[in-house]
Image (cartoon, rainbow, N blue to C red; front, side):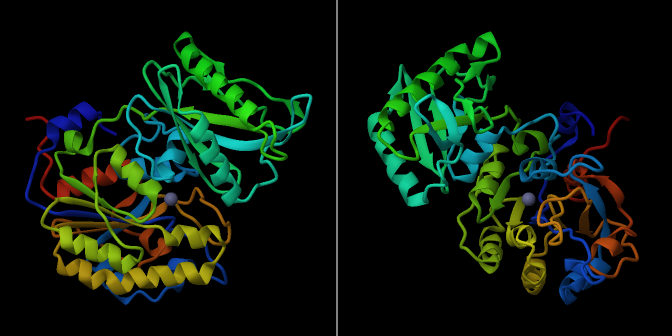
Length: 401
Ligand code: ZN
């Protein structure tokens, strides 16, 4: 990948419209001989494939299974190894919380400890979400600040929550306040550098207060805190690529990831059709659109092959409305593969289709992983997709004389 300073130098604004359509976890593996993409009836995507150039990408590296965070950073044109998004930040973004650069975010668990201070259940018996909400409301009422650090708490599912420490001089270089195993004593947050001593002290005072407040609880009588992280310092897409980007996504985490790189977040409805309608309604206002379809990944993670197939077919039916907008450059790809048979993300490369009037259309005829493996784009690092989109949008200057 070329350095960011060079990208800044080469990129230039333009009039062209670029659309990045991400079907989360698109790539799959065969069951009874066919992958989800191969099984899906996709006349519109097949037709588009015939007019496009195709290939495969690796999100982080060959063989590495990416999380959705690095998967998307790569798609947005950033080096996912350079900009690490910590667990606490990802969790906060996933809950729709908006972080500022000073915030220190952390994941939390309600947990159970016995009278000797031994953690006997790291998940407090997976208390119901409703109970979690009550506990968080109670903690909020009683702890809003420690020193000048504001404490922001947000319930997650079952035993999980997010804590944001908002204040100055909070460094995230802190070892988890979590013994990681049951049957071990609780441990305090431990600073791994001088700079993070203050934050660790605030966190430990917070945990102490929580312990006092929860001392009468049967199950959730303590908390564990882990994944301390701050927003990575990351140049915006506008700054790097000279584009005016907007994101259309239904899940908070992807909206959060898009916000992280300076995309405008567009309000949209729940369905895939709603997302395509939002694209149409805003097509004049921006020049780069990230459209995120979540359910291909969700059904892959559930091991639900037929439903993943259905989502691909649903997207297929909406492709003509997208093409009516006449994007100059359209990329359809995934952020990683999620084969239903594995019920998880995987290391398999992502199918990518690039539609643009300036590409060398290849001989690939079907929208599928194995067909795309024969495509003209070959196999490359996903981080380069954005450069390819800019180039096809005539937004990259020549390098050198
Ligand atoms: Zn994903």
